[in-house]
Length: 431
Image (cartoon, rainbow, N blue to C red; front, side, top):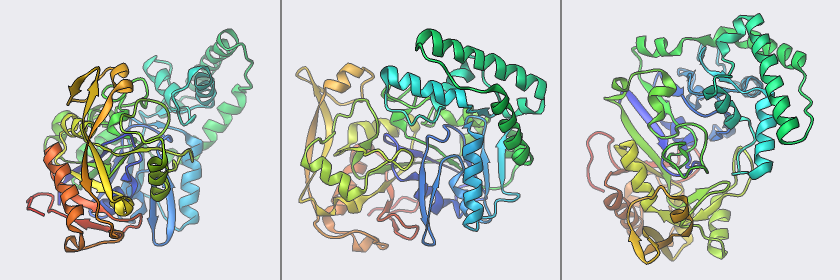
């Protein structure tokens, strides 16, 4: 077992990381969320129960695992409260197993108000959870951290200043009044903080001093990274491996011996606006959506669906330095006689083989496909690599050869037990 494992989304999010982290975290002592916030929606089906975790590390579902919410996250105390109450109702005891960074910034009601206003003005398809504005306040040095709540006078001063700032934006930019009540926000925030104050700690020091094995759980996906993704149609944090160090407060050297796994669907999806070269808008796209149940766990919105984009996937492999890939939802392709994969783009008569930064190029690029033969047999629930149809093996080999790293596991259904290891994560052998 690897002492440090990093699991990241290799596409535009929604790759099935929740199930994978739940599965793998059983072998770890600590799981860490370190970027994003309640805009994430990690779905796990365990013991016949469905869990959708927005803030909590997925490993918290295992009774021996300590969950850590690190400093790179933005924390909505109301969402945290609902999630923890839900865990208790479902018989999950988190006592002594959850830590929250005292340096984590808070998502406040005025962030959600601004999110709605910004989206109405010219939206990119956010979850409206206030995540972008919370990061905006953080980097604008107007944020409120959990540690600020210990000083009620300072917290009150910061809150009043921020509400006045938002009031000016509402009235002078959007010509709208707001209904923010400083007293109500102040009292509710301190009430929730008092309820969970015992969980707040310096988690960077905790991780540095721990001798246990650690799994780092990314949220969203590489192509939504604020720096390396399809900007501006991205999330507001580094959802690639770039976010590891600044999201945890740990030196890059800390991760030098980590094993990095990327999670990707056997096809491609994204939610919200932004370029999507392999998007299928007709019958095939609808078929993929219906077969895959492609609706957002956080928003419920239908996902845009398309064939697997290997240009984008190879880009994700390169910038993250993945050691291997996990492919999910292979069974969704069981019914297709022909399966296409994008191996390059064409733009203004030129062939493009590397993922471009230009929004214009991505929006106008045409995918160049390679057609592969489908297997027309069920792969759902397969647990033995020998049961994979030959055509499905060929599909996996094609992905590996193109992106340059091995596919180590297939997820063959939504349940914990529906997966098959193709390779040992350390000693890579052939299919």
